[in-house]
Length: 187
Image (cartoon, rainbow, N blue to C red):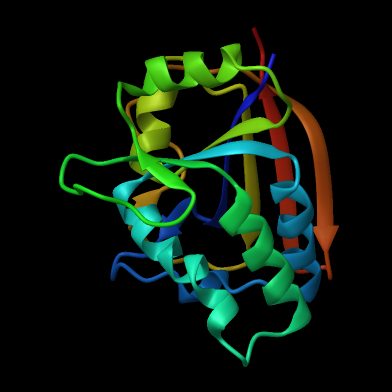
C-alpha cells in the first residue's frame, strides 16, 4: 500500500514559512536539491493546498527558461510529469499535470491508495498536512531542518494536534549544515 508522506523544509524552531510570509532561507544547495530530486522520483502523486500549488506553479513552465541549469531542468521534467491534486475552495482551474480535488482529502487518499501503481502519496502544505494529520492519514513525516531560527510563522507540525508516537527511520546530514529527519508513525 502506498505511504502518505509529509515532507517540507523547516527551520530549527519548527516553521516552514517565517512570520513575514517568506521562506527565502529554504533555498537548497546542490546536495540538498539533488536529494529532493531523488525523493521526487519516488512519488506517485502530490497533493497540494492552494498556496503551495501557486508557489510551485513556476515549475510548470520553467523549461522555457533558458537560464536553467541541468539540475533545474531535471527537476522541472520530474515535476511536470508528476500527477498533482490541488485542494482549493477559491480556484476554478489549475495548470499542468494537475486537477482540482473532486472530493475530500480522505477520499482522495483512499482513491490513490486503491489505484494500481507505485509511488508515495505526498502531502504538500501545512494546512493540508494538518488536516491529514487530524484524520490520522500521514504515515511518515520528513523534515529537512535548516540552521535558522525564524521566530514564528507557519509551523511544520500542526498545533493542538493529538499525541503521535513516531519511529526514527532515517537521518542524514548534508554538508554539516542541513539535517534530514524521517520518522514513521508508530501504529
